[in-house]
Length: 172
Image: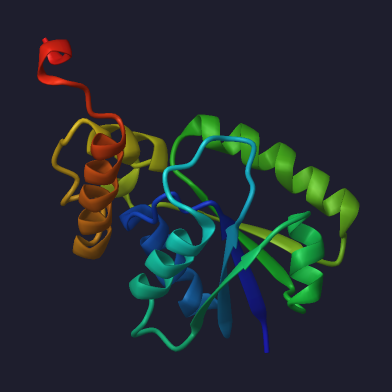
């Protein structure tokens, strides 16, 4: 059996991630969606929320499992007995970043292969950062994320608005 991990923060999961994972599931026996808990960037959703959204995205695909992790990705891959790390490429700038990361991971774990899949053309503009920014400004993200993610955004934005509300006199 060939097990692959697809690591990321998935904040939030979007159709580009879903495309890559679904296509990887056609290539490998099992895909482990590895939701990284503490990246060096600010996040909108907690690790538990992100894991829940990723689980919902793949609830009907028995080949795709979801779990959280921390630490080095290659160490997590070893722990999961994965032979492959799957990454997605959207644009040229992704290639440079992923190329350097693949070389570093290969240095740390030469026995684990890195496979990069090019995203479908309709998803090339998607990034979690873009989706978050649009959602935070109450923009329409329905073509970028599944309905349950859009709903989670609306709830999160509403809770953030409640936490940062100002008296009416200060809103203008």
